[in-house]
Length: 140
Image (tube, rainbow, N blue to C red):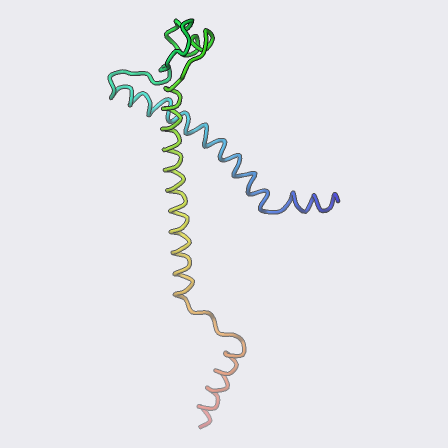
C-alpha cells in the first residue's frame, strides 16, 4: 500500500498540479496587489476620487460608521465596493489566463506545423534499399 502511495505521489501529474497550485497562489497575490494598488486608484481618479474599498450599504440602523471596517463591527452591511474590486480582479485574471492559453495553443500549432513540414527520416531498410539501387545503377 505504501508503495502504491509513493508511486501516486511521485507521478509527474501530481507534482505538476502542486507547482500549478503554488504558482496560482502567487499569481493571486500579484493580481490582488495589481488591482488594489494600481487599477482601483486609477478608477477612483477617473470617477472623481471615489474609493471603492469603503463603499457599503448599511442594513441596520445601528450602523453609523463611515468606513467599512467599523461599519461591520456595528452591524450588517452590504459591502458592494469589495465586490466591484473582486469583479475587476476576476476579469483581469481571466483575461491573463486567456492570453496564456492562447499563446500555448499557438506554440502547439507552430510545433505541429514544423513537425509536419520536416519529412521523417528514412528507416534503416529504406537506406539499405537506396544503397543497393545505387550500386546496381553503377554496375549497369
